[in-house]
Length: 525
Figure 1 (cartoon, rainbow, N blue to C red):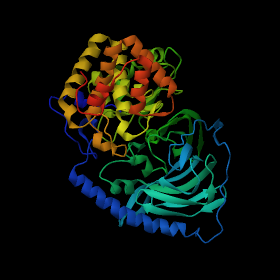
Figure 2 (tube, rainbow, N blue to C red):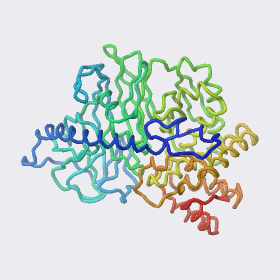
Figure 3 (tube, one colour):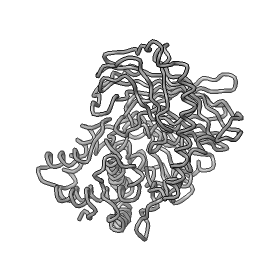
Figure 4 (tube, rainbow, N blue to C red):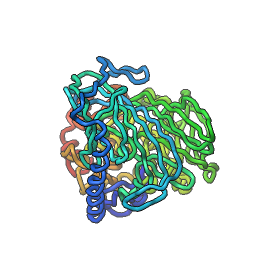
């Protein structure tokens, strides 16, 4: 995720409202926002409990337990589950099959009012491997319109835990190491999502587009998930929209069919990725253009007609940047590196949806220099954040700080050292101004990521890596990073792992740097 504005700030960054951070910076919520969110969540929990209690009545606990289809080794579209993360509680999610169809606007009761709202029908089949013996599973899901949960042909009982979690009774004990699948059938009401919080999320609908917003935990607004950033999963999508829309999602397009004025698009991403990166989008304004890196990696882009003339200004250098990343840090972790113009819900910058990263319209309309930085940053996320996941939100700098460092290196490779040095000066100035606000890597693994969503994880994180590069030399540091991205591809990492591997491979201690500048508020110099 690229947030350019703070890089040029003349004063220390301040905590921002998580609902609408200026210039794209995700930040801490104001007290008033928190109070409003708590009230909305409380009311949502009551409404959801009532709604789901009615749904689950169709499968009472007193009935014979439903059987759960089990497999000793589960696969997802022919890809066998490997490297199951047994540190995850209850299950490691292997993949999600998503079917989403736009039904049009309908009159529904939303927040006690009768409103016209866009309605989507959805079915999601999730494949899991149990990491402990379990008889039930809690999923992260906010939808009160969950109609049925099933395993094969058997209906399972479910109930609301609170406004953001649903507990499904599996009907028997599923052994550790055993695979199983659950299917969720439900509706999504876009206006209901608008009312649920004072920020966009879930499925956002505009006059010309519909698109998902999932970061950091908004994926649960439209999908039943296990949304820890540690739990990477594969993703397929079958998406039905009116035929005038162009539709985009993660992964490779696997076909398009048309029937009765509607088009159905199929996409497939068979490499694990964080659930906050799942994306579906449809627009009547996108114009597609195709490009390819020198190494043969497809780099399609979807830009609105209004900004089509700016496409080359913003994205023209990305194929060379990708070639630099591959030659320096190893094979590209995904099959494509696409870009799509779509609004972010924080007002600028971009979002690192794997294979189809978002660039906000304001970047296409604004400074080409800043927009290129955004494009390079989101491209680099395929290595850090997407290709190598973070284990905890407290390790957020391993995603954003790493990506910002790679962005500076890519800018230098494509546009020269003068351009890169100018960006580094802004980065270091911002880091000096903000470092005292909180540790780069707080000790609390369970913190809300919005508590550290500010410039520190970006600019100070990049500065720590630049300090390491200067300490050991660029050649050695690049070799270490190449090994890091290769060893941990499609796996989750921690700050502790990084320090241990740095010290082991480079043969020296970095305890002072990590204690002061990573786990503390000191400056890395």
